[in-house]
Length: 129
Image: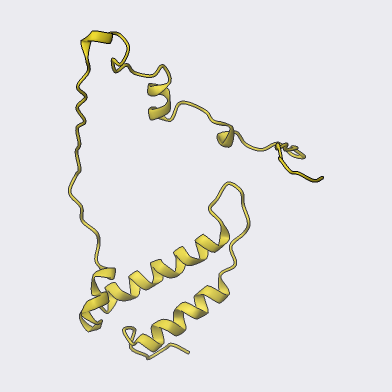
């Protein structure tokens, strides 16, 4: 259907995007992002590819969507004026868990694989049962 057509034609792009969106049916997997998100991601990646391929023939207002984003390395500092009057209260200290959390060594409940037939519980507050 799309063979021999110009890739930068807006009508063709819309047709390709609609076809891709209707054909992609990702699996429901709790360990992955939602299927709807993955469908939209696939469409946006295809759109960026199409913009990059037809870069010179695409309208200027959308041309930058196909270009690679180049960002400088960002840095930041934060200074606190700490009163010595109430020391050690208010003094900055490192959390005990900080190193294991930032290194990825800490294991959270969502990181643990689910067991077959695993049950869940949740508190639900309601005025009527």
